[in-house]
Length: 190
Image (cartoon, rainbow, N blue to C red; front, top):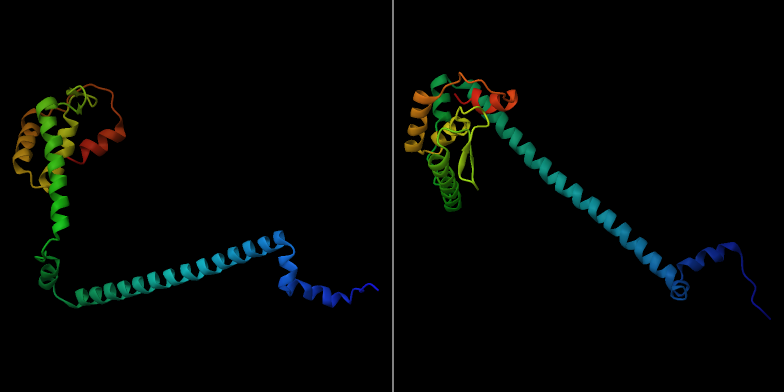
């Protein structure tokens, strides 16, 4: 005699029985994939929430510190404010010193090539080693580099560039120029 199927409630329970999935490997694989995806989704959400909570607490601490500093500055007279603004002599990290030196060396290399091959011209073409006057020959690179030379402490190069600007710069040129480029490279440098 054949076994008859029991009520529909027992058919729902068959999905909880492991033997059901062992006999159907595709459903087992699908169940595992769904489980892994849901686990990653929940785990990732929890990780993101934790990271955001840490970041929010750090930012809150910084805001509180800045508020305290602002209150202190409001209550102190002007002479004390000047003292706060002065640079403190903190030792530089060795890696910072090394990086700063590498940047300075790169600037010296680029500037010496400009001086040698394109002095007074707007730009240096590095492959042909020739100067190009794309801004009408007003020394755009030279003018644009004045602040960089000064900030980097390249006093000798800065003095030579400053002398060129004082003695040779002539804006009385007739040429077609981009207003934007001319404004950002020349107007705010001189």
